[in-house]
Length: 150
Image (cartoon, rainbow, N blue to C red):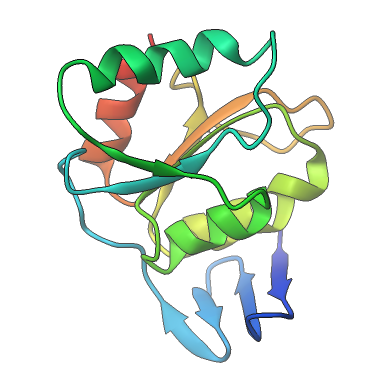
């Protein structure tokens, strides 16, 4: 990815990044948040729940038995990831999706300083076969989420 853009017309938000030049929201440079504690973080993911995604949801349920955490979904993966890039959200976990859900947002995330990997911690690379991803604004939060999902 050399350039990527995500546009939310109803919100009048245009996210844009060019490799090596930073990430922007409506011409203002953005950076991800600095939240490190899952109990203070707000995450997005899993708009569609079904048989293949149920094991991932069960891991969230197990985590919720230990302590509270904030989790929601806006149903638009590309925008959820862009919100991590500008600090509106602290993390995203997704299972499945299509190349258009991830392509632009992955560059925006990286240019904003966020971390994005496969759910097993391997580096995330753009391919047509999208697997599950974990993205977070801080390394500490990202590592916590990977541990939780094992």
